[in-house]
Image 1 (cartoon, rainbow, N blue to C red):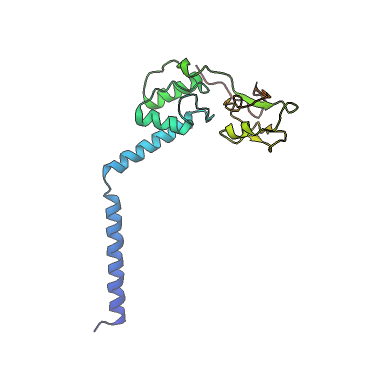
Image 2: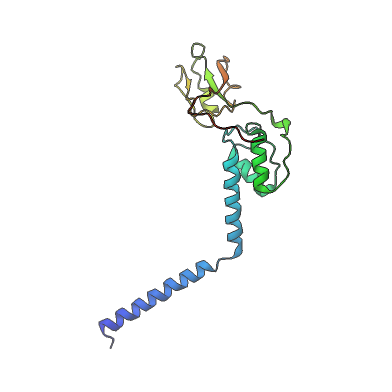
Length: 185
């Protein structure tokens, strides 16, 4: 007959063996997981370099899907007009490739801009709200809308659906709060 102390020691030893076994099996994962983790890290790094406009000019619905396509499908890195040459240069350095010119079939580089709604002309149709990929436009049906400029990426996706052409794009005003040193060429 086992004493209480002996039973506790056996149970503790059994639990310890289970924990060590679980730890060893976790450490012995196939190398495919390591490769998948490296790919995920690389996708994250590529995504961080993209401008996050979510404009879809590259042919993908947003910056993350484009980053995935660059890493997984080896799609060219020069399809991002909002990022321009600076983003292409940074992507090339990260991926160890040559620096191609911006592929202008996807658009041309423009200085950062924001959408502004001419409020007197807005009819409150909500089509721009539905089109905005970053929810930077607020308003209600049949009421005037406005753009939260701090959230707007200047993607231009709100302009085509507007039936009264009350949306304009304006350059972002440079202030001490958003000014940054230019990137070296």
